[in-house]
Image 1 (cartoon, helix red, strand yellow):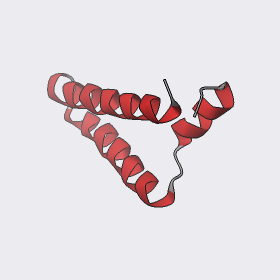
Image 2 (cartoon, helix red, strand yellow):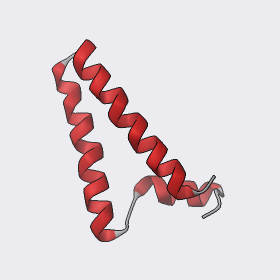
Image 3 (cartoon, rainbow, N blue to C red):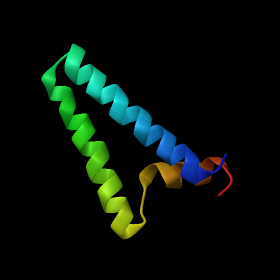
Image 4 (cartoon, one colour):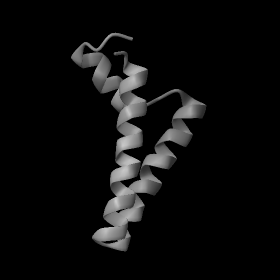
Length: 62
């Protein structure tokens, strides 16, 4: 798998997890959803993604 697929999978997992935590644990978990969404939004404009940088340093193929 490539860096882009890992980023998409991780972002989708984090959003689903944060929605479940918001529903079952505490409403403040919605801020994790907002953070992930904001990071995806800024990444679309700047092409800078912290997870992508980490995965490239670890050696995941691009």
